[in-house]
Image (cartoon, rainbow, N blue to C red):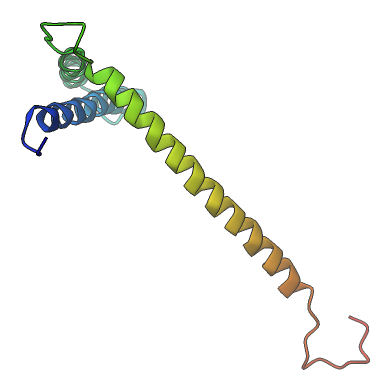
Length: 127
């Protein structure tokens, strides 16, 4: 199916809802952080930002649940996103392992370089 069809629109809306969940959590977290450290002293502003964050979080969660008429043939966005997240995490794990082994190679090369004698130094010197 070409992009622009139902599948593409559904995936785009799922992605947008995930972004809205993150923004909602960010709003709630920043408001609580601002109140805790005394950056914002007005309780009305803090309460308003937390209420907006909670409302956005609630709407995004309802959007991820989705209105599907036939439950037998319809997958919710949550299950589809978990499948894609599992695949992405496997790929990211492989990339992380690759770079960790290159880091170990870099440490080994750094140790070899550090332990080499300076060719310009006096050969009869002890260290």
